[in-house]
Image 1: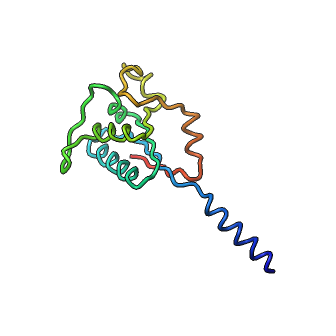
Image 2: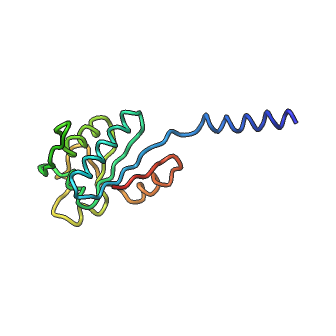
Image 3: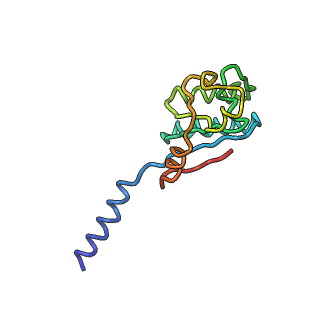
Length: 138
């Protein structure tokens, strides 16, 4: 009985100590600048809490990734979603546009801001299936 109890406790705490930290996978599709801003604020706050974050920009939100496209600033920080996105990239957050964004517009990879890539659907699907990944869509 004691051996069974020790084995159970070892298995329970062994699994807890090896549990992976949560990762936030943020998919932003909204063209609404306020939604974009709040998404970037939440992603930034997650990074501030030492959470690994990755961002996928799709649909109209993909324009945040394009050099020369602007987004409005919001109070109280007087910063824009694009500025917060750039800050996330500087902090090592992986940011990609979805795989169908560029082929369906008059933009190429050369038009993307430095540090932004193009997502591979098989790679994204593999990432999403990880048990520690929390998926957020805006």
